Length: 75
Ligand code: SF4
Image 1 (cartoon, rainbow, N blue to C red):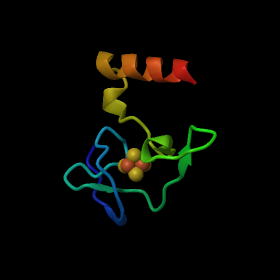
Image 2: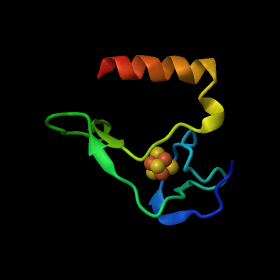
Image 3: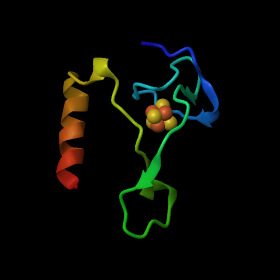
């Protein structure tokens, strides 16, 4: 489902996220939480958008289900 309320203070290109504005490169949330999965983060890849939710229409996709399983087993 396309989100109409783009928050132009939060640019985002993760269009697999439930909160992404599909036709624009913005998040639709009022605010997000950014965190880290590292004990001592030193680079951009160490950071995560903790507000990310996989789009509901992708949850049953074999490609994404497999990826989500392998990600969760790493932590
Ligand atoms: S919640 Fe995070 S990943 Fe999802 S659209 Fe917003 S900024 Fe992007």
